[in-house]
Image (cartoon, rainbow, N blue to C red; front, top):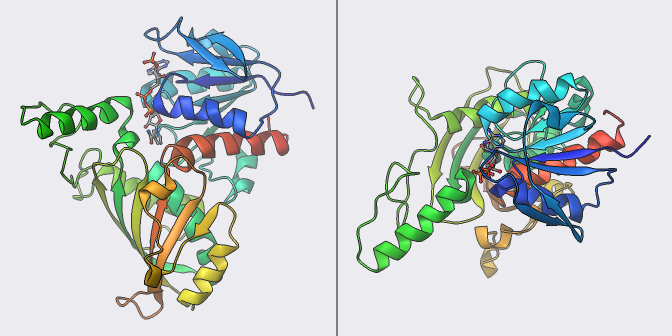
Length: 338
Ligand SMILES: NC(=O)c1ccc[n+]([C@@H]2O[C@H](COP(=O)([O-])OP(=O)(O)OC[C@H]3O[C@@H](n4cnc5c(N)ncnc54)[C@H](OP(=O)(O)O)[C@@H]3O)[C@@H](O)[C@H]2O)c1
């Protein structure tokens, strides 16, 4: 098969830049590559593998001759461009939430549900960042003992909300330290020295959309019974990069903490750091800039008879978005699905 022509849509954004880096790191084979943005950044330069590329404004015609699009340009751009790309024969791997719950769109974490890729009709969705890191940890445990109930509390970094949010944390922190006033725009409350129990908008049931994404996407990816009880509380914390999650799992079968540790030690994409006596457990700083999803604090859950609690940390820009996008592109190439 010929090497694919690639396009990175949203190449000038937080996730797009990371995708560009990872295409290089994973040595994704390609024939041609192009970098697309809105009119705002069109004309700017991107250096990639020793060559300079001019960023182009994305139009439907940008996808002529393109085989694989890695997109992180927000929901509105995806809704506009994904059908245009698919119509021209490209596979559009989307980071936004626009298509995740659409029945004919596979929602995939590479290494977890690769077979779902075979069902694609031109669009493949990348899960939300808080769901993504969780899947690599939950899948092997679910295979062992069957998830019966799940409770997740997230501690999410500001980079999950894009460049503007990163800038707001820095500017708000500086203003706060200098005793100057600061008007927050990205977040509903000041983010410096604060913890905000709201990510995305509230739904009628009192959960936020972010929390419902964890619930619904987990069920779709792991093919769980839709009635499986899942509850998530999603919280924004003043950290630049890296999401942390406290997870309580009730199993139908049995899985001891030792078994869980053993299973996760052998799992693709997961690294266990779990020796609390020596203060060895993963923190966001361990995860920022690297690929693994880290798991630690694995212990019997006191709330469930058959259950474990654990702590899970990952780089939201990598496994939560860019790394999985590029891994999906890699699978599409390996499985000859373009
Ligand atoms: N950050 C995360 O951790 C994370 C995780 C998972 C998913 N996501 C999703 O990934 C997407 C991008 O997030 P981000 O954090 O990278 O945002 P960002 O830093 O604000 O970057 C947005 C990118 O999209 C481009 N863009 C915006 N509107 C466009 C349009 N109409 N046509 C073409 N290009 C357009 C921007 O181009 P300009 O430079 O021209 O403005 C920029 O390259 C969002 O859907 C987000 O929900 C983000």
